[in-house]
Length: 99
Image 1 (cartoon, rainbow, N blue to C red):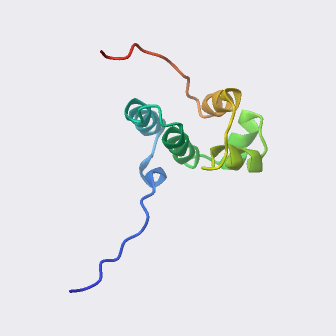
Image 2: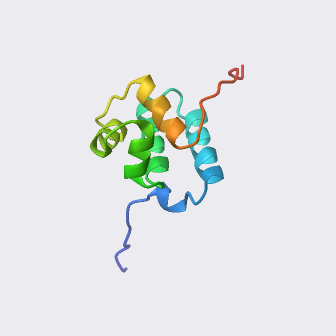
Image 3: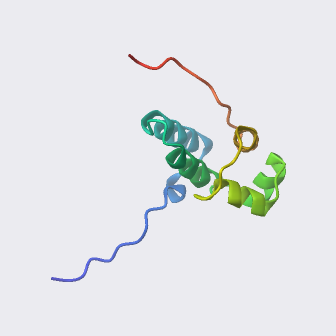
């Protein structure tokens, strides 16, 4: 039997436009059950679809600061997340939890 060759899955390769990014991020948020690490990873994938240097400037961060905030080791503040979302052209909304 031949060896199966695999490569890591990278969602950013398939997020082609803002509608894709929005749908992907919302789906992760809806299904993450409060897992902030998973949500942050999805936000990082969405961010990688953009020019990271420009995104950092638009969010009021350095490029290194943006990478750190979105890394699995980063613990960004809510304000930082809000700035990144705004720079991505996204807004945070709420809705009632289904019972």
